[in-house]
Amino acid sequence: MGEVNEVPLIAVDWGTSSLRGARLDEAGRVLEEKSAPLGILNVPHGDFAGVFDSLFADWMKPAGSVCLISGMAGSRQGWVEAPYAACPAGPEELKRYLHWIEPGRIALVPGLSVEQGEVPDVMRGEEVQIFGTMRLAGLTDGLFVLPGTHSKWATVRDGRVTGFRTCMTGEFYGLLSQHSILARTLQADAPLDEAMFLRGLARAGEGEGLLHTAFGVRALALFDRLSLAESASYLSGLLIGEELRSQELPAGREVILIGAPALTARYALALGAKGARVRSFGAEATWAGLRALRG
Amino acid sequence: MGEVNEVPLIAVDWGTSSLRGARLDEAGRVLEEKSAPLGILNVPHGDFAGVFDSLFADWMKPAGSVCLISGMAGSRQGWVEAPYAACPAGPEELKRYLHWIEPGRIALVPGLSVEQGEVPDVMRGEEVQIFGTMRLAGLTDGLFVLPGTHSKWATVRDGRVTGFRTCMTGEFYGLLSQHSILARTLQADAPLDEAMFLRGLARAGEGEGLLHTAFGVRALALFDRLSLAESASYLSGLLIGEELRSQELPAGREVILIGAPALTARYALALGAKGARVRSFGAEATWAGLRALRG
Image 1 (cartoon, rainbow over the protein chains, first blue to last red):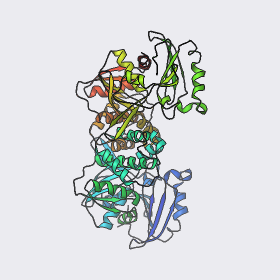
Image 2 (image 1 turned 180 degrees about the vertical axis):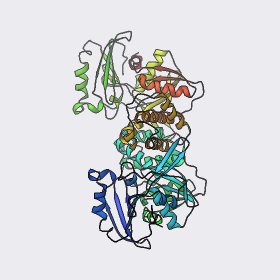
Image 3 (image 1 turned 30 degrees about the horizontal axis):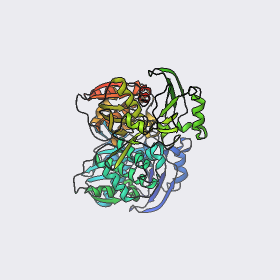
Image 4 (image 1 turned 90 degrees about the vertical axis):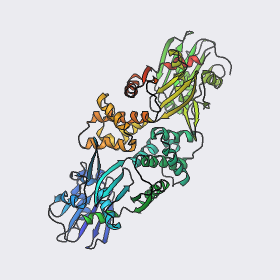
């Protein structure tokens, strides 16, 4: 559980489907990056140590090298389970709960958990992006939104995540556009059609509920009122609109978006339509976040 | 387009995944039934006429035999497309829009369409079950609910369907329980756990939205607070609860349920919890409905 102040830092983001790492200098600058399609579900024979060594052994050679790993590598299906740290939690709490695989050398960053009524919620990896963005943007408070397969809406107060909610928006998009009856009349990877996206967004705002509005994509296609490409943007608008509908969002509120530009652009559009002010950051915040855990 | 008053009537319900038929006597009694796993998506080489003959040629031999076919066989992917009849529509309108494959001998029953704002809705097959149930129950008005892959909520006034809404509840259950991250910790075919179902129902009623509450199934399982079997009933409650949440349902309102007993039982439980009165009918209403179209 010792302090982690030596150079260099090897920062690793080990997710479900991919793995990427960076070698950082004392100032947190990226010296070198690597990535591989070896997410936790694709590790041969579950040999996490072997994959780690094959990619990072050379980076770990200098005496005192430390590696911090965030993401699903710390889940039950990952390398070793690193139990969630309970909210409210900031970098200090996470540091205390680092799960060392090799003491003082390789650690897994725990995810966060929160209790809301009878139902818990969890994140694993996004907390590091939040802390990294706070550092990059000089923020200690705010509403942070990380769109994705499982979008996270996190509230930060005085440098600590006090609560958050997950929405399965990205996963629902994949399920509906690839595996449902909508798949027949929808081009899932079509580029964004902004007008259709906003139309879906407005439709979601009417409050009829996703179970009903999603079928509208099918019905509109049956009557040739939506093309294959338009259906994709309309469905995306329905889903993101549904996600926003269940969030408290005071007018004029600033929202910090973190994620890939193609995705944060859609959320910026949707949040803008609701009167929110938006600032967007890339997922590169991960390196800054892991560095923040170092000391 | 002629009248269809001769005996016998061959009634066929040709759906997406299966096909069933019945030979009825003058009084509408079932003399014989047949079924096959030859839904419209499983018709070899698209030879609908061949499948029809192989199953029903002997039934069709008597002079004056008439066959009415409801369901997806009249869809664009079916035998021939039978364009939707627009609501409001009752048996008289459907009779006028029968789509004859062999004049006076074999007809496809059109489905219904309705316009709600900018978005249409459609049904194909359920309209026949509604008209059959009206006949069996002696009803000319009411709220009819047909749970299933795509649940239908239809309002009937003076013997005609005036409007309806589709909810993709059953399809969402299949997608989430089989293809999503929830599948890992959920036994999709577990028998109903009533307490867990009601817990899911109550959770949906809190209005947090399905995109968020569905992730709760995963989080509860991660903390060992839901077993594989319990997760299935809880998710079912979340989905049916979400479906009910988007419906206007005055207290004490009577709801007519039509469908398989295992499914109508869940809806009866959910609607009962909302203070609605419920009467349930089986899908056998199809034969009565096709007979009602005959004259």
